[in-house]
Length: 212
Length: 212
DNA sequence: CGATGTGAACGCGTTCACAGCG
DNA sequence: CGCTGTGAACGCGTTCACATCG
Image (cartoon, rainbow over the protein chains, first blue to last red):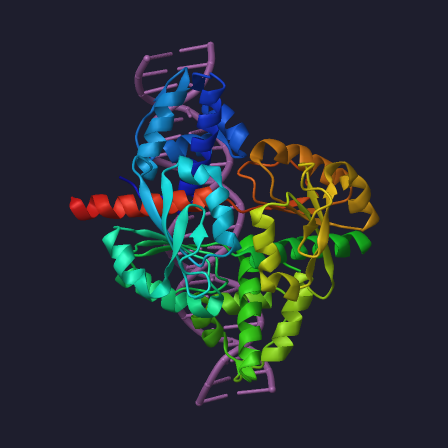
C-alpha cells in the first residue's frame, strides 16, 4: 500500500460523515464529483484518496454509498469499540461527552480522572471521577489505548508520560502545549487559541489592505 | 510582502506563546535554534517564518524575546480587544470561556445566543443568554466581527448566514459540517470527531503492521 | 566568530489529463 | 458514453547551504 498523508485521512473522515448523511437520505450512489462538491475539494482528489486503499467505484456509475461507507469505517478502524480515558474532569471533557458523533463512531469514555480531591468520587455523566493516583492501574486494567487530555498546560506532559507508560498510544490534546511522546504514540492537538489567532490575523490583514 | 501560508501563521501563534513563557522566566534573548527546539520545528523554518514579516533578529545573537513578542502580537492582530459572539450556550462555549489564553489574547465573549427559550435570560458566566431573534441587532450594534459556532450541525449554516450578514468576518466552527461563506469571511473548523478518527486510523494501522 | 536572512534544491500533496473499463 | 483510476505535471511549503553582518 502506498503511503497515506494526514490530510487524506482527514478527508476520509469527512467523506464518511457525508456518506452517512447520504445513506440517511436514501441515496444509493455518489460520484466523485458529487462527494467533492459536498466536501469542498475536487473530484480528482476524492478519487486519489480512495484509490490509495483499493478500487471501490464502478466506472460510469460512481460509488455505492453504503459499500463505501463500510469500507471507510474499516480503513479508519471504526469497526470496533474504543475505550477512552479522559484526564481532567472540566468543561472540555463535558463538551466532548455531549458530542453525539463521539459515541456514534465507537468512542466511549470509560474512565475520568482529576487531580482535584474535591471532584474525586463525584458523579460525572454517569461515571465516577477517579483519583489521579489510580491512573496507571485503571488505564491498563481497562485496556485503554486512547486518552483525551484536558488539564492545564503545565500538568500535561506529566500526565502524558504516565498515560504512555500505561499503554496509551493515541492522545487528543486540548492543553495548549507541545507534548513529547515516543514515535509510536500519535498526538493530535486541538489548540483553540491558535485558531482564534488565525482569525485575528486574517481580519487584521483584510482591514489593513481594505484601508490602504 | 510575500505571501504567507496558513501553517506559518499557526507557528507564529506558537512562537508567541513560547516567547511569553520565556519572558516570564526572565529570558532576554532566543536563537532560532532554541525556538525551533521548543516548538518542534527547525531553525531554518523559524527564520523563514519570521523573515516573511521583517528582520527582527540580531546576527550572532538571536532575537530579543520581548521585542519579538510584541512584533508577533502586532502581526497577528492581537494589539486590540476582539469582541466575540458565542452562538449556542452549551458546554463547548463554557469550555472556551474558561480557557484563560482566550481572554489573555484579547478575545472577549460579549454576547451569547441560544435557540432554546428555556435558556434565554439565564445567566451565563456573567452574561445573559440572548434570544436567537436578537442576533442580527446585537452583533451589529456591538461591532462583533468574530463568532464562535457551537450549535448542532443542522443549524449551523443558517446561523452562519445570519452572522455574516450582520458583519461577522471570522468564524470558529465547532459544528461538524462544512460551512459556506463568502470569500471575505474566514472560517476555522475544529472537528473533534475527525481528530479522533485520525487516532483510530493510526492505532489500527500500527496494530495491523505489528500483528503482521 | 556566531547566528541571521535567503536564494536554490528538494519533497510532497494536489491538479491535470487521459487511458481504461463497465 | 460516463465516471473511475492513475501516471505525469505542477505548485508550494520545507529544508539546505551559505553569504552576510553585528
